[in-house]
Image (cartoon, rainbow, N blue to C red; front, side):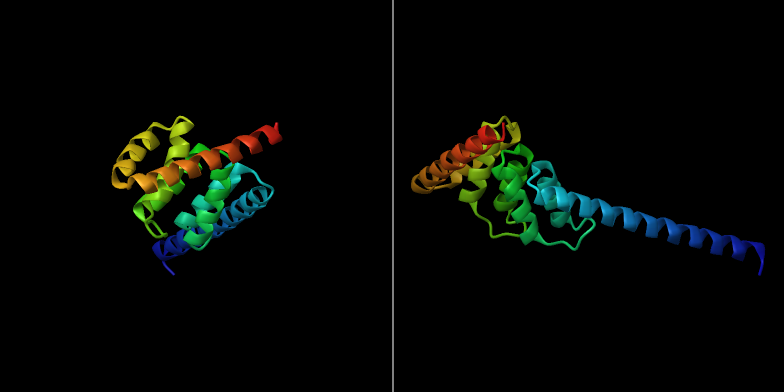
Length: 154
């Protein structure tokens, strides 16, 4: 074997090892995140939802992404509320639903997310007065539940 060939084999071997180690680390990170999410940690629920949404360390599964993002959003995590609203607004892995998008984006806007405020204004102009009123009622109910959970957690 010539030196160049041996050098290439050594580099490929090193790259293979690095990829294997990275895969193990990613799998471990996913499992740790999942365990924390299952205990109710909102940040971990959000992180897990995003991992499922983009297939990071796990097979892409939008149903699971929505489930975990909703859990985080229902605990008042603004970024989860925003992303959930965006998924419904764009029909990203779910049926496009402007009323559901408005609900989650409105919650995020009420909690200070300016992007959500602009998105809500746009969505409100697309909804009929009846649907908008129902969505606003749902926002109030969800915010009451979120506030209750936050008080109980203190």
